[in-house]
Image (cartoon, rainbow, N blue to C red; front, side):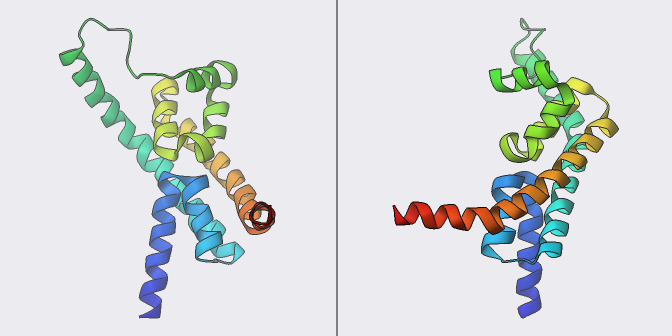
Length: 160
């Protein structure tokens, strides 16, 4: 029974890491499940990377369906493919794929960031590579933040 519970914890952390990395998978692994360093980094990075790969390949299908939907229900707006808010537009124009990959794990979420990156840059392998580097770097940052800095902040704000 204990190993089944452990497998369930790993699955949940893996799944959350593939969807909402910085505010889902990593904090659950560190704060709730108290995974040790290597286990936390391995599972969360694997989940984030798997999410980036799956959503990079799934995004082509999603964008195709969106284009068909748009052509059917909004035929007079041929230049609008994917709605873009000011934040993502600024990131894309100022920093390009580097910026999208940088902000994806903690602000945009893996599915949204990967979909936008594939839409704007089309080269899935390049997008996946940038996402992997970003996910792994943020994984170390978040692990140390949630393990060492977050408890101090939490204690400080609860005391005041």
